[in-house]
Image 1 (tube, rainbow, N blue to C red):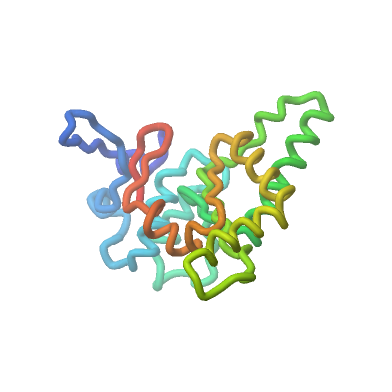
Image 2 (tube, rainbow, N blue to C red):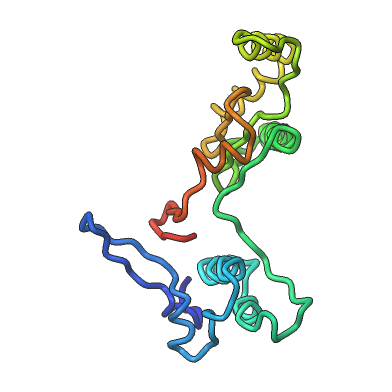
Length: 203
């Protein structure tokens, strides 16, 4: 965060393991007389914490934090950039994203640049949940038979996605028949607290 006017919001949390982790404190804003984040809805607090944590990002400036602190009282049309901690996609939207990433890597290679520089900036989970057709039903073998047909019908697509998972460090592919995207997210991926590569905790 450097010497931002909000630098004092960065605090250290001592963990039970004996380690420590940094985080950005919303109550610290009130301590400095900068506003009352306690009155904000939880969703706006998440945006506010993100704006604090990313004050060294070129898209975020102090006035974005101030606009969020004034939520409900200030300019209702104020725009605030949001940098998510992770992204979850289903196949209809996710497969085109992987195609775009592959095209960008190809363009980098053509330009004589390092294609490995093309990488999602945040972790991405891509759940394939809209693909399986129902050809068999009414018996315990229906699901495996339908999944087998799905892979046969879309072999090239799944080979491409397998390549994508191995090519991009921050991309995970969840295959068909694991569950729908919302179920998979809640049961396997959603966490209340995330930790970035710099060891900073955030919601």
